[in-house]
Image 1 (cartoon, helix red, strand yellow):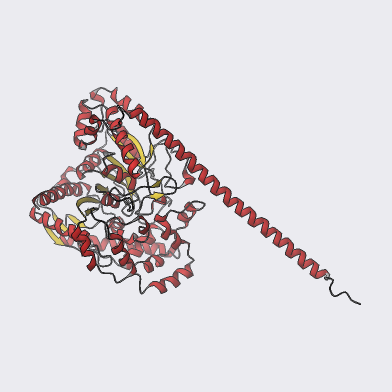
Image 2: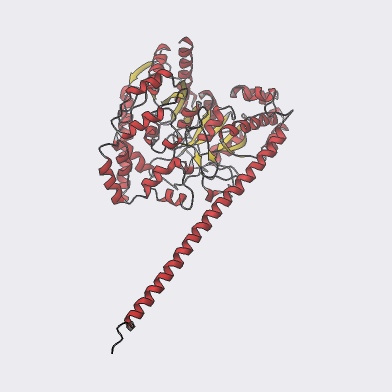
Length: 590
């Protein structure tokens, strides 16, 4: 009688192998889960430890600065209200000491960041720097003697982290100052704090799981712009006279627009960008440049002239020998005639909201009243140009970005971007087909994919051709300057910013062209602008999102962008100062 219920030798081997495989799989799964838990625990502990330390340091600084129960004394308030030119003059003459100026701005920054969470770290030894400057005789004082400056998180400041809003970069302090920061120090400036950025800096929002959410000055539910959002908020709220930021697609200009101050992007290569941290080690055609945040364009003009006019003890070109030695040229500051300004009210591919269009129209009227010559101008911008920008900025299809956010909490400001980058190529193609009818921008974002090295060369050639076409058209129109929007809508709510990235095409194109460009605040969103949203076209899902995001933006800043040809910063800033005066005169009359 055969025992059929008994397993055969083959069955025993098979079951043994199955049990063994199951056991190994279970052990591997447990190890992976524990590893993930361990990584997350370490992540949270590192962030908690660092935030506790910074909180303690702020408490000590607050105690040191508090006088008579208050941070902002009358004297300090008078100091922070001074225009930059007057602050410099009084520091030079000794009417205000470097220590007084520093303490005034430290106190104001503490108040501002308590409201908007824009400062990540205060520079602990700034008082030592200020005291050393106070000991200098007047003959030894630099052009920016004692002027406090704030520095974006991503720009290297010796002894401080450049985190990009990522926990993995905590406790990795920079070994030296970025050449630009060192140049400002050599000119006499005092870096006194670092400011917040969106996670990875690839967003027009300003939040991350390390330092938290920086909010819009007028509405905590809305974004202040990014990625130099902390800088823009601090400057616009009076907590810093001058901020150093960066710009690769509008990162200095959009925050200035959303916060209500002046933002400026020079030609890439005009100012040293060494020591600027990024999740991308390199790009193929669009590079990050330093950006400046200030109250007025005249402030940017003053400091840019200083850093591009080397002195024996303050020479940016010596610190960064790879930088082209393009010195300040005063002859470019005047055309010898009224400025000839091209104007672009909107890109048909990305229509602007009524308020944005209104300030362009009113600015055109103001400039014509001031005697400037205004001519219509148009830029090529459709799905092809938008795709070209995205592929050029991320030629690796997001590989470095995804590695940067590995084992990190992903912030809402980059959520959509990360989700799209994680999609396999076949699924991107399927979704592109499925969304092509009802979405205007999503198919373009899905299409942005660099397939091979040959395509990278094609991309660079396409960018060069785009630049050449635009410059040819510019010269045919005999333009000095170009006036255009800075973003398609007012500052959107934080939960919408990742979906509305295409609103930044107006600034992105200036990066792709490598044109210097700046932002001027013109007016505020009005009741009439809000009512006119009823007529905003919504043929696609995303345009409906723009419309919805703009509702409730009453009182938010509205501004214009001004651009010039590459290496024409002198002309651009002189023109921006004239445009600002014309705008002020126009609004005084109305």
